Image (cartoon, rainbow, N blue to C red; front, side):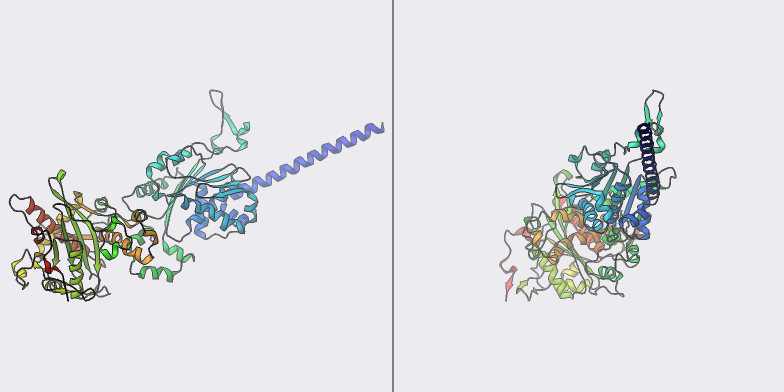
Amino acid sequence: MISTQTDSIYSTSSVTTKDRIKEQRQETMDKVNTVTGYYREHPEHFVEDYLNIILKPFQSILICFMNICNQFMFLACRGLGKTFLVAIFCVVRCILYPGTTICIASGNRKQANLVLDKIINLIMPGAPNLRAEIESWSITGEKGEIKFRNTSKILVVTSRDSARGARANILITDEFRMVSKDVIQTVLKKFLSNPRQPGFFKLKKYQYQRSDGSWHVKPEYQERNKEIYMSSAWFCSHWSYAKAKGYAATMLDDSKKCFICGFPYQLAIREGLLMREQVEDDMAESDYNEVSWSMEMDCLFYGDFEGSFYEYPVINQTRTIKYPWLPPDYSRLAGDKKLIIPPKQHDEKRILSIDIALMATTTKHKNDASAIFINSCVPQKQKGGRFVHNIIYSDTLEGELTRVQALIVRKLYEQFDCDYIVIDANGVGSGVYDALVEEIKDTETGVVYPPLSCCNNPDMASRCKDKSAPKVIWAIKAGAKFNSDCALALREGFKSGRIKLLINEFDAETCLNDIKGYSNLSPIERTKIIKQYINTTLLVNELVKLNIEENNKLIKVKEMSGMRKDRFSSLSYNYYVARQIEDSIRQKGNTIYSAKDFFVFRAPDMYKYR
């Protein structure tokens, strides 16, 4: 009897203990559900409470929208910390949503690995809770991965066809403009084939039965996979601009969970992420590039301006030349044949043009700079012998004296083996012209350059006292009709694809890294080379900001307030003269020769040393 009662007591106690444990477990899970639900609704609080990171207001807003929206695009200026923001979001999502797989892609693995690096080396040291969540990690050139104890993981994938087969619930493409559109469409987006499958999906109360008898998760519990794109702005002609416009249109549809925003450098200054003084110094530097600044700091896509006479997409598609030709003192910096001036081809003509200015740029003289272009005109058999005009060198001179500019032009004429010099001989240009028709001595090298004469204007030719001087100078005395013809011809040259320009400076960085010895150059030496690409971008910027006025069937090109048009003038004169030479050559029995065409070797007195 006693034994039976004792067994009954122990049995009752055991049941009570099990119930208590069960109740406590349920209470704990209820608290977990409540806290998890709250943090999923307010991820910015989770970042502060769990990761010990105090977010800026704009960061809190973006973290919320990244968590809510299925499609998210963030365009940010340099220094705003978008990679850090992505790193925080990845951690939040992996912890709050167990079993999540995040794939990070970028233009290269090094860029994508930066997200993992910030998680491990920047966030984790100050977040003990995160250290407890992470099981393992590996960040190398071949592998980038972080595994969490709750089976979530973050992977870095290569942005190419070889990445096929990966699966993800969230796809993050950092600097997405650097990734091929085809790779994103055919490879990366295919990762998002399967949504996250939490364990509770197997319970009947979260499922419904279809007409065919099969059971499926109720739609209200299913999670959409996410696409997140991060980058700075880029050119309007690039596919990324069309994608950004598509996101903006979709965001206006209340039935879609889509978000896009762009934050310029002013926000970074306001939030203390950039110093105002540093930004002002960057804008005051001599190599300040308005186009690059507009895209990378103003967060504005760059392209056409309303009322522009020259269309950006038309001009941009002509930027196909990978390498400039550089004078000997420049090309020696890298020592690669790609940058050396090549021997002249058969029937090739080389034309140097300069639009003259003598005053340096100041508040009073905003538009004064001499612009130089060298055009390699190569006849194409498949185009009936018409020239393709390759603009392979450009430069600008500010504040240089007349004799200095004349010497620079004369040296370039010889170094590039040019056939003609096109010069604006009106106004201050007449002084440079007068210097060219006389003997010029380079005091540094001792070389004396003989005089040159004019080939298109007898009055200007008479100013040269040496009657044997080669007639190679085209002296431009521009009037309203001439300027109109030049502007129209240049526009047609771009539209027909007959003018070729250097690629932009961003793409050039990849090409120049293939140059032997380029990586060993100092920043100053690299700048001398990359300057050619920047000058071309400034030319494009100048062209697309030009407006026109029409009067008596003639057009007058005008620059916007604060802008220049010296590059336009120099290039338009160059192209116009090249067309005249081309037409003369094509006319039967009316071939134009330069003085050099009559000699195999130069005259003995071409250079004199004194």
